[in-house]
Length: 313
Length: 189
Image 1 (cartoon, chains in turn green, red):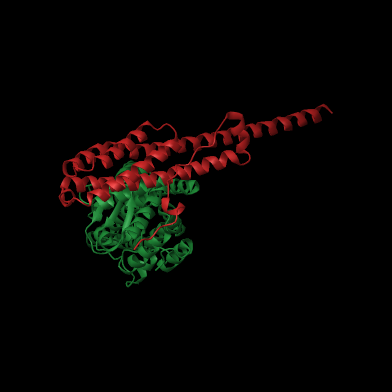
Image 2 (cartoon, chains in turn purple, cyan):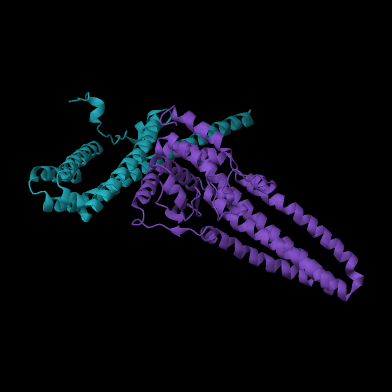
């Protein structure tokens, strides 16, 4: 448990350092290109690298304090007040007491798909997000299992790493995209103006294209490495410990895995959800690449072993 | 010869130093567990206080409709008083079980008054009370988990040595009465 918290904090540190290095490298590379193009001797590359470093540090701070809000905005979640759904509110309150956590904020996504995730940077700023489909279709004991699972993610600091990944990895994807476009268009203009430099430029373009092709699987791998599957099993067993009723979560997972698909989900944040938000039917290359969840059958089996037959359907 | 003695003394000093650090670590872990248990108790206390605050409102609301139930209401009020005055964990647990019991009989009584059941204020209070009662149950679970960890630490080796030295005492569980588990259920037709 405490090793998990330490490991999550360490991984978050590495991720931010990796991000800083990546952005600086990009700044330096763009600077080198400008030096080559306009003939300034080493002027642009250093300036741009420092500039990139400043931006990257600012972005890292922003991602630490603001990426939970980004995730909430992306999923179009709205906050739930006590009066709107006292039952769910009391459930979260009670289970967070049982987990020894401060009461997290509760958000709702209006979607018939059944899914849930947690976000925030630490337990005092924890947020639990549930879809309306989840609340409507699960029984009380099943809903408690899911909420307790998300509370375990908060307690283990899984939310810190998972949420920062959404912001930083998303940022890297956007930057690589901009650079790719910049070189395509920049290269095009250049070719028509001075055809003599075209040979070198097309080589640069080719290399960058190759790099970008390599980069997206690397990003996916980063996510996979960071979000190890064992944390889902750990959160499942912690959930069972909090609710003292493993069959609740097992039955919930059975329902969720059949109807987990929700509209406002994308690859950058699939790893946050309790079950694959793209549904089980869609099995293309990309969604398999980003598949960060252990199979639901295995999770259900482990939970039912814990339940010793109590409440198992 | 002299170097041999110096090495021996250094080795003994190193071992003593290691034992000292290990001792500090164990002592600190016991204190940290005790603080966690105290915090868990505080969580229960917060919920209990919420219930104490709610009971007078509930009693007033019921009084307006159920005029013939003075005795039941008085029992609830007495149990609340007992809970507020309780000093030890065991007394507190006893009083809380009493409150839960008297509230149950109050609800059984309220079933006889349809106008009371239809009262908005009453149903809102009931909902809050249900929420608080489940929170008390969860807080009790958390507290008992913490007590178990603390008690295990001070009863097993090497924690038990420190418990004796620094007077760490075993803490009491917050127990609930399960009347159904103790006496056989009588079924009447």
